[in-house]
Length: 315
Image (cartoon, rainbow, N blue to C red; front, side):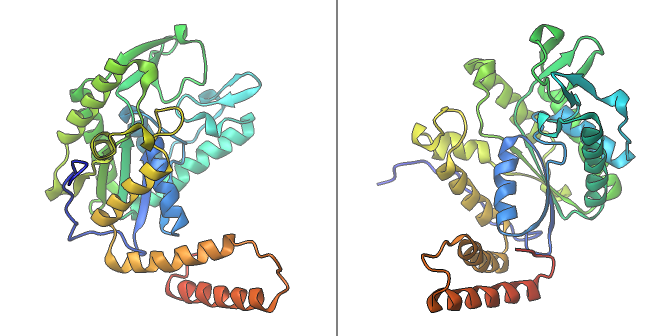
């Protein structure tokens, strides 16, 4: 008896992710979930240098800044509630003025370097709803809890999303023509916009994305949203807020991603690294015992073996 409908996923035969791959993850909070997995397994990756970005225009702006090597100055930030913020970045970067400018410029520099040598770029879109700051007539990446009356709320059309993605891809390809671009839609539901509005938003994202997907040009789609909405069609796969996927759901979608995009050799190395990571997290009852000392020696040998294969890995 089958108790769920399953999305048919094919195993990629070319351009698979391995430990020589250099990955960039940009976008909505689901990119953080996948990024955290890649970090745990010690892949070479850069994750959201400007923090979580929810829509395509914010991502396009970040890529533009990185390629043009923009230098942020105090004219690009503002003070609110004793902290300094940027409309181009998530509040994760907010701090005192000097710190946020340092973080923004480091993010631009890091992304510029990684874009040139990236093998795979994973872009996750979360919403088609955007906010335009009335004072400057500029669509922002984050409102930073400024009163909503200072913004106009707008819904990007599928055509606008398509054009933004095309511009982003063209920018990336201008400095790295062989990079693999993987697009996906976040399964996180933006219910503050409203149930119907969330459905409309996700529909616009899916339509816009599929207007640019072309495997012949190394532009692919991974159905994380569809897996959540269809295969995991049950509230037991959500956190207590009933909006975000819980750890079980994240693990399930991660398994699907591994099947589609991670090489068999890398999967074997991941098993070794997982063993090391769990060993490092182990808390002994008696750390002076012979048994624990033998455990530490075995763990050190495993670390040395992995580092010999992949010198960039640090535990």
